[in-house]
Length: 584
Image (tube, rainbow, N blue to C red; front, side, top):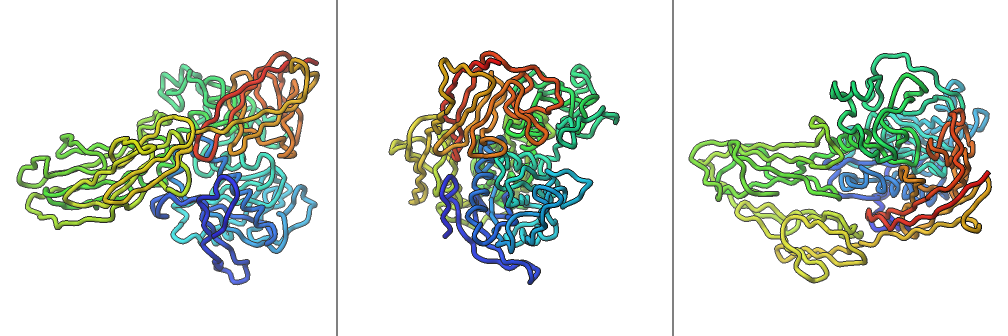
């Protein structure tokens, strides 16, 4: 058993040493970070490490923990984390680091995945493009038994503190940069969601030109006006006018696809434009659709085919953390009562053959396009001449893992065996008091720690409910009335959470320290501090991170900064605020 400190320690299990296909390659250790179900019924995130020597493996695991914890604090990963298995593949590299880090003249490193900046040390590329040898990455990912290119996503972490990453067939990120844990979800937006960059530049510090193409294929870029979007019911028309999850309002903002003018995006800033912000609704909808497509909504139950009318029929849906999936049963088009199971003995089935259908639909508000809403069906032919042999099953076949706390608003589930003659009852109790029955239990927001139990067939499962969001503290330099001249710093701390903040009601932005030093506080100035072609800590109306070539108004005056944290169980802590004044 490999023990990790921190947020993921309860779900970690070392699976042992595996040998890659090429004999000359270093061996690797596969470690379970989170396993919520069988490999074939989950979307499997395989995190590979490159450039971490044997002595640096603890550093790799710390980087994995930080990246995965950040994912679970962002939607839609937060609501659908139960759809994921996560595995870490640690490889003892002969040398520490990656190629061309940080410059083209930097040494080449002997590493198993051959990761390198500048697109693999290509002078025609850009520094931040961190690539990996695809064939080697796939060979090492194959060590996670049962995963294939169809049911997994590779995330390769390079042992570097330089900012960089890439998205495509796989996603890459530098493991140790202050912003690196925010690179991963952005690159997964590319690799998994097929989302495009919303940058208005390609090379840092070099402004993009005018877009000259036709209507983009990108779901979140357009040439159309807002009225044309509505009239044609095109792209993000369903979200127009909504408060954006990444700040501001969903509308039409110029710039994107590496150009400054002539093309428009939905939000002022979002995950695909500025690291640290959330996916806006357009990106979140696409990511929800793609995650759901990687895990079967119907993961088990009575196999499709011909069945008798003298039995209970079962369907096993997936279980999002945040809500229930809807299940509808119909017999020849007529609704039947039931959720995970329907008892045909009570349906008064007439002699002959009939069609039974179970439809599972995800009612998530993250999706508005009917064509994108996750839906699955299973169909049986009910033949009254068929006699069903009795069958049972274990008292508990699967459940929400009991090894780690559940959040104060999670939906906790228990799957029983699938007897053909009855529907076993699952009885729930919260802190010893009866709380109802059924296959799942939706916790309500509360405070403190609680005990949740589920009892069925003589078996009792117990969960600890962590219903207390993490408390966040803010550290600012001492100043009378919080009045500062020129600049000020802020450090956020939470014992067991991922801090985030927002300025003047704009979008929530993850706190990760300062871009050049994760241990340093964040620096606010009127126009931002330029680092590697971007200006961070900008208090002007354009947002926290902007291109230095943008014409931006200085953000002097009073500002309200709100801050909070999200823990690994999904609890959002209390929001606190501080008001500051910045003078020239």
